[in-house]
Image (cartoon, rainbow, N blue to C red; front, side):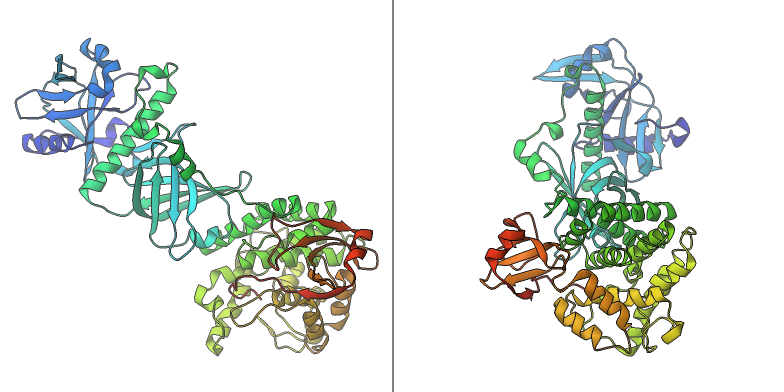
Amino acid sequence: MDHADNDFTPVVNRAAIQSLLDTLTQPGGASLLPEQADSRLLPVVVVEQQPGQPLLLDISAIRELAFELIKGLPFRLLGHNQDGILRTLPMTLRDCREVEGRLQGYCDYPAELELMQRRSSFRARLRIGMAVGVSLRPAGDEPALQGDLKDLSLAGCRVEFSLVAGMADMLGDGPLSLELCFPGGQHFAIEGEIRHRQADNDRQVITVGFEFTPGTPERERRLWFLVREIEREAARNAVDDQGSLLPSTLFQADEAALAAVERRHTRDYATPMARRLARLAAYLDLLQLELRQDGRIDSRQLSRHADLLLSLLDEDREALLFATVCLDHEPPLVRHCLSVAVRLVDLVGVRKIPGELRKALAASALVHDLGKALLPAELLGAASLADDQYQQLKAHVTLLQERLSACQWLAPAVLSAVVGGANERLDGSGYPRGMAGDMLHELSRLMAVVDTTDAMSRPRPDRSAYSIHVIYRYLLSQPQQYDERWVKRYMRHFGRWPIGALVRYGGGELAWVQRLDADKQPSQVQLTSEPVPPGPALGQVLRKRELAMLGPIKEIVVPAIVVPAKVG
């Protein structure tokens, strides 16, 4: 641990020195730092301290350094109390002897100590190969989020998490419970609050800085011990001859403990395309978190992810359409935005449309509903809304538009039509502006159909999900609200048995529609035993002539899904 000398202030009062030295005599309260290049904190015990008498040290844990210390290698003693970090001036060992199996030495009683008040800068960093798991337990019944400890101080820590579904909700405001899990099987629980977040979309990770809540002196001593041991193990890993330093017991791996603290972020997906689409889902989930922190949508990141969506669509549109129903563990709002974006751009197609316009459509649709992340959770989860709550709900459009100001490459007309027009209706009953008839842009008319179709296909607290046939009938029965031309075009394009539909054949077999032929009839399905969202345990894939054995399709089945908050 390196600190500038001006970080410390001198302490010369005898009573204050004695009080501070008492800290070093506490269990785990002292460390020894040799005065040489690349030194790290080493364990030592201050057995006894009496003013005017030599300090008695137990250096049994660092026998490998005893010879150098006896030869005069200078060192400092370090510790901490509630005021900060304390250290002695450089000192040397006067004598060293074996006493009942313990190696003990003496050094002069210090006439001066130094105290550093800035505790948060006293930070032990883990090197490569030093794995410390962190289990974050959010409020509620959500499962713990597993991460990797990057550094630890007396005031807080940094933890790296993989981007996973629902992270925006798990990393919210308020106190969170953390548990540090060391390879040796030791656990340390502590509470803290998030102070900063830094995302790396390329590596699909987010580093979170936590500030610990104030604790007892015993907890502080335990924290100091952990910081010291991390520094000691880092020093051991840094030298070529690792046998010169004894390993910390915290890092003497216990296989059962290692298995218990591994980062469990990898999920199984039904298809390879679903795994790739999950990267876009992670981006949108993290974007929710950034928006809640009063952030703006980063223009470059939105551009990159719009390009990713288009490249996946151009590579295999049918595989991508099916992948949108394979992400059931993602937050409802993320699933909705992804599905709408894929279907909107697919419906528009690639002919007679400039690439810039297609990309603007993809980007606008990807984020079109994320303003809802800025609304109170109880508002989105309500089964019914009072008039004042409905007015509050409408604000999500304006809230999002304000945060898109940095994305100047987005055509304003497209942004307004897609984000601002998704909730408008032909009869003027929509929001936020209540536009009607000819006032509505053609893209707004299209977006309203795509957005409503997907929203109705998902369950909400006030209703179950509807099958695509029920949705089609509803849209056709509402020509005063939805443009009939776009409703029929949607139906023709995606078909009666659209990709991603769960169908039941005459013999009772359940199967997911994965591809359609030129007549919009299923040409490839994958069997499943349960009416639940598709996962890695899907059954046999059947194609073309094999499908004839199943007979005609009897009905579309709505899979069982946990009821989420409203998304449409």
